[in-house]
Amino acid sequence: MKKTILTLAVTAIVAGTMLTGCQSQADKIKDAQAKVQDAQNKVVEARLDLDQAMKDSIQQFIKESEDQIAANEKNIAEYKVKLAKDKVANRAQYEKRLAEMEQQNREMKKRLEEFREDGKENWVTFRNKFNHDMVQMGKSFHDFWTGNR
Image (cartoon, helix red, strand yellow):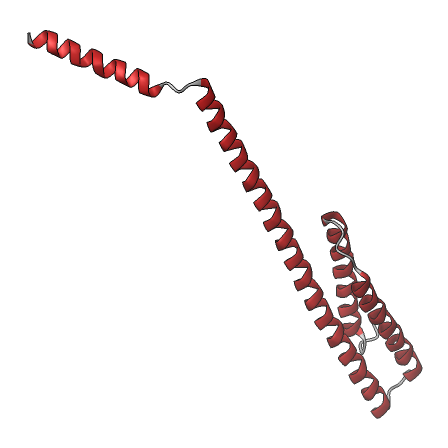
């Protein structure tokens, strides 16, 4: 009797597990569609986050560049005052270099103002070239009184 009850219980458990564990084809399709929709929503959200991060990066770069350009303008003004006060040999040469640096700074300011956010590739190219030019401008300030070009 024990054996019969045990066999009957095991059979009932196995049959119950099989019936509840099997999903219909329609249920499987609905689950797969829900997972696909969830993945698509996550992709859209990730793209929006990436776009916002890129915009934030661009705005930060522009702010830092504007600050550097303003610092360059201040340096140029200080150099002009120093040239006017001190007796400097080769004053004309220094004034010419200073005028060139001032023009370059104006051009960089104009480039920064005219930049439009129209794609990651354009942004990376613009940023790299602008950074290079900004470093060169910094070297010009550093080397101004030493006579190096």
